[in-house]
Amino acid sequence: MIGYYVHHVGHGHLHRASAVARALGERVTGLSSLPAPAGWPGPWIELDRADEDGEDVGRTARDRLHRVQLGQSGLRSRMAEIASWLRNVAPSVFIVDGSVEVAVLVRLHGIPVVTVAGPGERGDAAHRPGFDVADAIVGCWPPEAAGMLRGVPPALLDRVHAVGALSRFPVADARTRRPGPRRVVVLSGTSSHALEREDLELARQETPEWDWTVLDSELGSWVDAPYDVLLDADVVVTHAGQNALAEVAASRTPAVVVPRPSPHRGQEVTAEALWHGGWPAVVIDAWPRQGWAERLEHAHRLDGGDWASWCDGHAAERIAEVVGSVAPGTRLRRSTRV
Image (cartoon, rainbow, N blue to C red; front, side):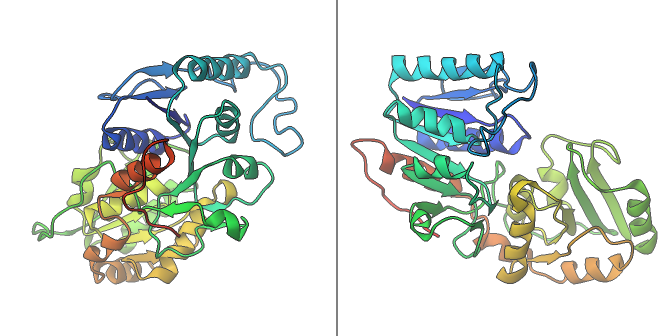
C-alpha cells in the first residue's frame, strides 16, 4: 500500500495526485481535506481542516514550520488520523504534496517519503525539514528549466528528479486550427487575481481582429476541464501556475504568460525559466494596458509544438518510477534529475 497526502488549496495538487495514483498501478490511499476525486484507485481518508477554528497563534513555530497553530483542534485531529493510518497500515512509501509537517510526521514513523516540491525560493527554514527528511524529491518541470528550485543546498538538489510538467489531459496531436477569426483564450481560473475588468476590455478593444474567450470565475465563465477550449485557441493568455502551464503545453498552443505574485515566488521563478528556455511563450511581468496586438502576433508566430520538452505526457509515469525506487524491494527503472 502507498500513502498520498494531497494539499487542499487549489485544484492542481488533486489533479496531479490522481494522475500519479493511476500510474502507480496499485492501491493508493489518499489523505486530504478534499473529497475523494472520481476514479481514485483505493481508499480515501478525508481529514479535518487545520485552519477553521481557534486563533492563529504560534502558526510557524518561530518560522520552523508552515502551519502548526497552538490549540488548533483540526490540526490535532488530522495529525492523529494520519499517524493512526501509518501505524495500522505501514505503507511501503508515502508521497507528500504540499506539507512539511506531514513529511516529517511520516518519516518519524520510519516510512520512506517522496516529497513533491513546488518551484520558487524554497530555502527557508520552514521548507528545509520537509526536504531534508525526503528520500526523493520530485519537481514537475523539465530538466531544461534551470533554477526552478532556489535557495536550497547543492547536496539537496542531488535528490531532485525533474520529471516534466504533469497535465491531466493528453498531449495533443499536430493539427490545423479551424478557420475563422483568430481566437485567444484567457486562462485565469477560480482563485483571486490582479486582473481587472477594465484592463481586459482595453485588451479587447486594441485587438478587434481577435475573438476573446475568458475562462474566469468572475470576469467570464469557467469550466472545470478547459482542454477543448485550449485546443481551439490560437493563443492562450495564462498565469504561470504549474497546472495551467502543463495544460497549455499539453494542448500545444503558444502562450502569453503573465505570472501572478505567488508564495515563495513560484510563478515568477517559473516565468523566468520560460523566458530563458526557448518555449513557445511570450513572458511579461504584469498585465499590460497596451501593446496586446504586438504580443498576440508574436505568440501566434511561435510553434506550439515546442512545448514538447516542457510536457511530453509521461511525467506521471516518471514519478511512479521515482516512488518505486524509494519503496523497499524495488529499484528505479529510469529517472530524470535536475
